[in-house]
Image (cartoon, rainbow, N blue to C red; front, side, top):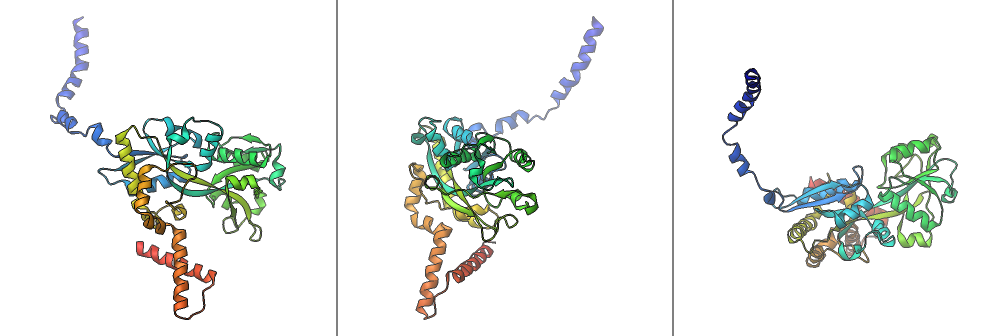
Amino acid sequence: MLASIIARAALVLPFIAALSILPAGSAAQDADAPDSGIANKGVVELETGRASDISVNMAQDIASIIDDGATRRVVPVVGKGAVQTLADLRFLRGIDLAIVQSDVLDYAKEQHLLPGLQSSLTYVAKLYNEEFHLLARPDIKTVADLANQTVDIGVQGSGSAVTATRLFGLLKIKVTTATDNEAVALDRLRKGEIAAIGFVAAKPVPFIQLLKPADGLHLLSIPLTSPVIAAYAPTRLTASDYPSIVAAERPIDTIAVGSVLMAADLRFMPDRYRSTANAVEAFFTGFQTLLTPGHEAKWQEVNIASELPGWTRFPPAQEWLRQNIQAATLLNPGNLKTLFSEFIDERRQATGRAPMSPDEKDALFHQFQAWQRGQAR
């Protein structure tokens, strides 16, 4: 028995010794560590799409101009899909902002997925557009040929799945849907196991750029019917986007899908409301920084003053725009191009010179943008 006690003591004593030589300041260091209140002050959680989604890049850019190392910080959170992201913004503890496809908002209302959605959530700003791509195997010549065929529309609950479901409904074309990830869907399409894959992504999509005519895969034009145009803005995929599979004289008609920065219902959470309001003000104030090199190119399309019909803007965002509407208008690249064109016309007229053609003004504006980027560097 004594031997057993001695043996156990021999095992325990080294741990006691180790504890005795811990730095004397350890307890003091714990006491000096910042408490959770200080660590969380000014923190805003911004949920994005999946890891491969362009919204992740946009969220990182937003964080880069908001974070000041002391009073403001944005923490991007990668979401599980567009529908889940919207539900997270509505119900999940801690999510203050989210980047959501605008048609997912419409879909949630149409399907009554989240009661009270429109009266609780507000929007901060409309962001960028992405394009719907419908990539098909060789024997599928038109969208009508997809009737009763299998089309992969992306992971269930994703933005692509929502857009494809709504689009085929608007076109009254009944398809069988598969919900694989992009890599699996493309492999199945190459093997002829499915007729097409439909997905939303910012053009140009790298894997489509790598396709060759010999692959036999091609993009289908979307019929721009009245119901489709009522729900989505028309756009095109051109040879400049996909030179290997789109002919210069035959662009592909498709639809643009908008994205929106949405805010949670924070009216009864004053600390989070204040932090989100400060973050939004910093985002709007520093927006022009996002138009410089080193940031996602899609920022060039964003007009923070654009409105989202049927939805209420987050009050601090609305107040910032009210006080800074002229600056917000000038920050829109489209408006800047219009002002540039008017300046050229006035100068040519004042000096008695012939007006510039639209192509000449476009070329000169591109030179101005290149100069502007050089100044920013």
